[in-house]
Image 1: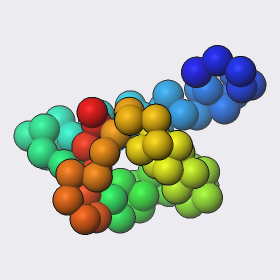
Image 2 (image 1 turned 180 degrees about the vertical axis):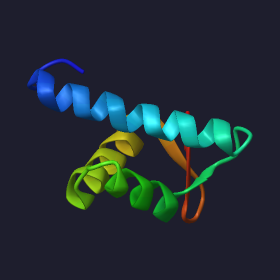
Image 3 (image 1 turned 45 degrees about the vertical axis):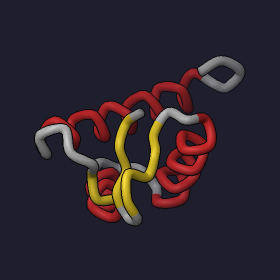
Length: 74
């Protein structure tokens, strides 16, 4: 995560850690996208930030949409 302010890098890392945690809680199965967004909002992230991060991660191949509405770490 080079080329962006440390605060944003830290937020992206925390958001990604949340995805990993939710995958572990779900026995490494894909996580429902809306459940992830909802939980991340409860953790203090804005919906806009979450959705932008998901788009970026999908485009970079960091995560993928396992099936419509479900995301998984690549």
